[in-house]
Length: 119
Image 1 (cartoon, helix red, strand yellow):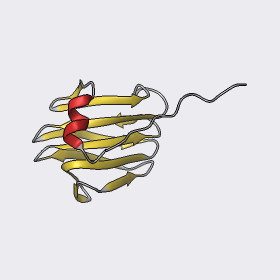
Image 2 (image 1 turned 90 degrees about the horizontal axis):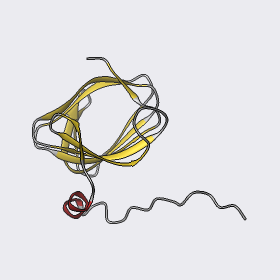
Image 3 (image 1 turned 180 degrees about the vertical axis):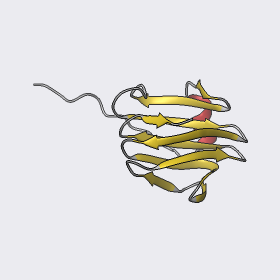
Image 4 (image 1 turned 45 degrees about the vertical axis):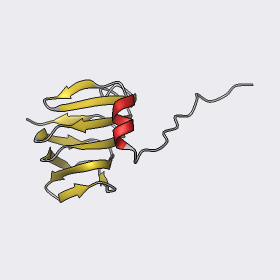
């Protein structure tokens, strides 16, 4: 009998300090670390935790597919305002934005397709 690949299960996402301490992190952008769950960010779907240091930002980019951003701790800001812990932001295909986190934050991000950086 064939079985589908194993499911990924994440528990206690609200315990952000524990989550941050138990994950493997790599540099992503200046001041931002990434801990990938699946996908490489170059092709197809991907998901990862992003950990922003205070003042870190992501340059202007465009979404080819949907992006779901769940803020677990702290806050980040884009042209739609400030998004604090507990907020789910869904950016549709074709949307563009810059992101900054003045105070730092931890976010779970799910991309349908890789983003295209414009700067």
